[in-house]
Length: 207
Picture 1 (cartoon, rainbow, N blue to C red):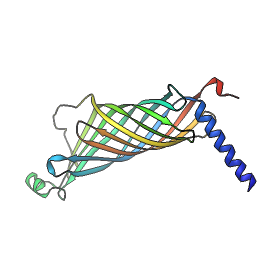
Picture 2 (cartoon, rainbow, N blue to C red):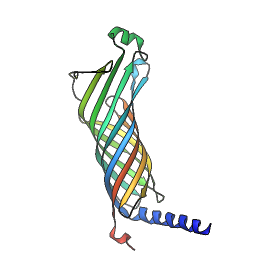
Picture 3 (cartoon, one colour):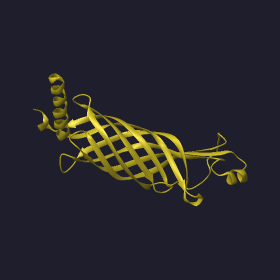
Picture 4 (cartoon, rainbow, N blue to C red):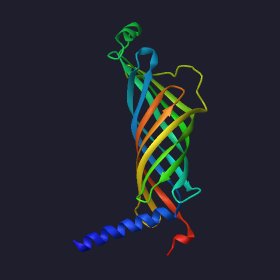
């Protein structure tokens, strides 16, 4: 029992020291999730599709030992799918059973992140997205993209929290819950993030 308590104490103090001396991280993040859109003109009905996003992420400590600025570049997957069950009158008029639109955006967020000594963290910030591609489907069949103005350089908001821990002296892994709101088309992505990062430590942290 004493050995078990000693191991827990060593893990606790090692995690605390590492969090205090962490300078910055650079790595990759994968974000599976759900994309949801609401249509205010149709009694706020919501439609969702599964999504998979990912990219690179950079985080750097600023001002003090707990506050970081975080940014990166991701390919963000989103979209909507509507079936005749969602709006029978509309689909009867169109003469189809389902409509689906998927979008891909270059997503660049900038956030402030507060990291605690225990490894838990919370963050909030804004983002800007650039349209990359749109795919349209009618009754499961792909159709040519409808000509429309691409929404480039649109803004959004994000909030997230998670837990980050060291897997070696220079590698860290993170797990987080992340919510992104795209202001132009009222789409919200709910995602679970998994990241693997290389850690850059302060020289003074080596004891």
